[in-house]
Length: 86
Image (spheres, rainbow, N blue to C red):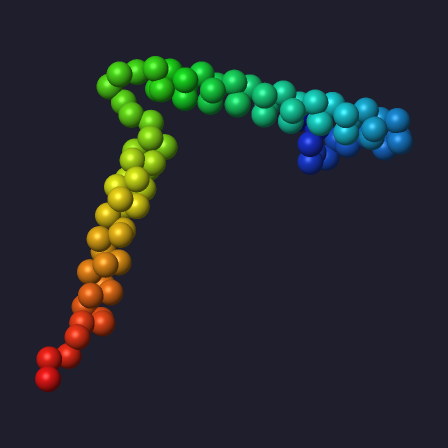
């Protein structure tokens, strides 16, 4: 990865191709290591009893909002279209 954007870039076409392939492999390896570490920490957090995964909390909050939605719609409907007393 040290050859990416440096002053010592190869001048020959074969050297440039080799440098490009090495840089591509280095970036892929860096991404692989990053995802491996992220997977390790996420799975470790998911297995813990003390923490709750953020997605679970979000889903539960959405379920609560969806459950309350019909009563809110009914309240808005009755406010807007209540009969006029003559």
